[in-house]
Structures are given as structure tokens and as C-alpha cells.
Length: 108
Image (cartoon, rainbow, N blue to C red; front, side, top):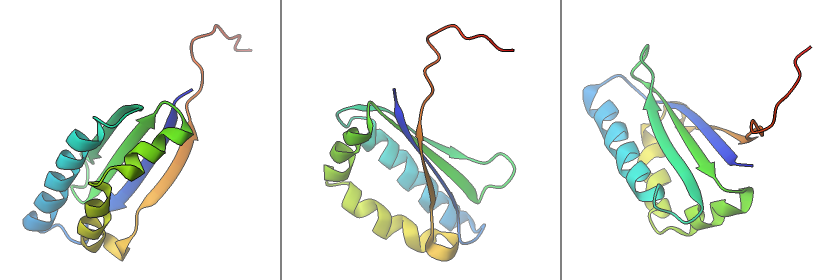
């Protein structure tokens, strides 16, 4: 099944230049990483309620597929650019294995 990373983070401020820098970097990253081998999808999102809140959803064929992402030279530019723009300099990264929804189930 698909291995998924969900990353939540918040901009350090609601200043337009900070939000725009994050937005531009995330769009660029999505366009680069979406082309990596064994990457199913690499989505970036911004909250409709608070423009400071962002989410990345990375979907890979399997957990080991991340190696292609980490070997991409672009990866070394991402954290150094993004981390200083984040509240607390932190990302909340969560790892998931997508459920197999291809089979019928019985809900009692």
C-alpha cells in the first residue's frame, strides 16, 4: 500500500512576504518532488481559515521510496530555506500506511 507522510507547519508571521516565500517554495518543491521515482504524489496546501497554516502530503509507492526523495539534490535546499520561516522552526511530521480500500468490507 501507499506510504504517506503528512507534514503540518505554521509560518512565523502573517506578513505577506513570509507567506509568499513559503508558498513559492512549496509550489517549487511540489513540482520538483512530484517527478521523483516512486513518488505517487506530492501535494502542498494552505489552510482556508488561517493563511499561516500549511500542510504537505507526500505519497510514495512504499516506505523505501523515500530514498529517491532524500537523494534529490533539491532536498538540501528545502529545510534551510523553510525552517527559518516557521513558527518555532518546527514541522509536525506524521507517517502513515494507507488502508487497502480495494476489497469489500462488512460494517457491523
